[in-house]
Image 1 (cartoon, rainbow, N blue to C red):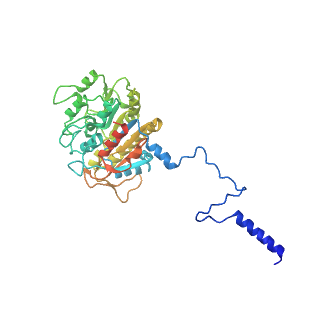
Image 2: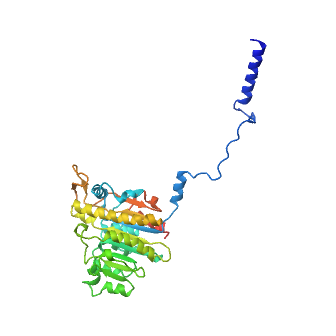
Image 3: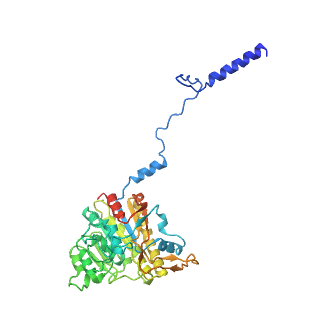
Length: 397
């Protein structure tokens, strides 16, 4: 190799080592970057928030309004049968959060509607048959009573008698669920803004006394109407007064036999209570689809399915309100499953072959669906009493 070639090779090696020095070891100070190296890019002034941080911010939101919807006797199979009989779709599919609750009562692994509803309304496990009382028959404060005390408008809607176990457990305190006239009298102790349900006879043609509770409610400023003088679809209550609409003399008919007020009531009720909310504090509303349960007791698939689809249509109306409002939490659940209902092999879409293990309730875990601010609190598996605890916490009571 001649001197000229050797000289060029040495120059090239020197250039390479000075441009890309080895990583420093020990305490050796790293050489400064060459002047020609580009400066690192500056961080943006407003970095994009990662998706997980966005969710964290949403978790901090709380609802102004809470609407609790109860499908009495509605287990997973009732939901499935309704879905498959409704073009394979339900409004329930729009709920982003789903949980499960443990439905047992204080005295039985299989609860009834009274104990189940009292768990939701007051956060206590009590005995089957108890209405708003604990196992010692002592009254317990309900979420509706807390809302009323805080100045929030409240409402109860049911496709059964308004004195029946589920709605009664939010407003009454009684040792036994079938004391309907005593329960009706409790409706004069708490000024619920909106009441829609059956059972006119327990208010107006009582057997235990001569009181007319509808007249007494009118004297206290309520507007009271009934199926006798106006159809639900024509109801346009003034928001200047509390409103009570009696849908039947005793228990309303099944949906398949002509009862049709649950969906229009579910559409009207949130708007009515929002207008009653003069102090902008929010409202509490409970809506019950009562007769899914009755279809289970009768072991009739068609009865269950028609009631389930009607309930889902009512859910759709409430979701429309919640989406437009943006401050409403919607919770959909059931007190228990009824019938041990199953969809048999050979069933098809729109043709359900149902079977039953019982004509009473079962101890299944029960689904909970949640939509809106605070919905994430309802994921997971928990006691049925936790639904009260979560609502109370979200309301800040």
